[in-house]
Image 1 (cartoon, rainbow over the protein chains, first blue to last red):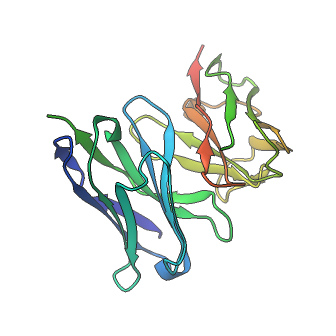
Image 2 (tube, rainbow over the protein chains, first blue to last red; image 1 turned 60 degrees about the vertical axis):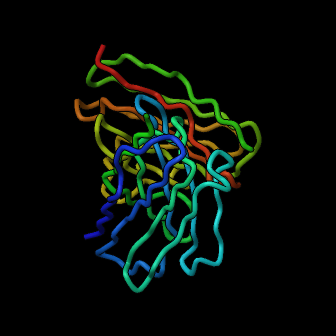
Length: 119
Length: 107
């Protein structure tokens, strides 16, 4: 069974940093591209970042470019999102999501981890 | 950036109704479109990809159609478990984008 479990969310002050993790199991993690998608409270979905299976290709949304860094460790079956210079508008539930095979829909999602940026 | 217009934002319907949700793109995306269902407090779930391909395990009352700029999600006979919010997503070009969402509520 495919499982994605996020962790690392919490309350952080504006300007602070946080590192999210996503532990994957039930599939060959090193064969799939992965993503972070977020959802602000009461709002819609926003794609945040993409990383290919070998980490050779990485994309960011303009809203986080230069502040967030996506990475993965295929040996540990883990995906990460390092978030720096956090702003109030980064407050959201952050989901990790697996790319569909050979295409960029998302066929499996984690349960999400809440990041709250507030003083 | 490809802009997406999803409509309606709110849809009131009854169990057994046939409902349709529209997603229009600012430029053509071939068939690189997915539909997701999200229930309160839960992660989204993939319903349809490649505009019309049903994800494994999804009931056949869900269907998708369209290509280019205009797409539709249809639920042929609404069930109680279908009351949720639905999102379209284009994956034709970076940055991937989602529609604003359609909440299907009980009439």
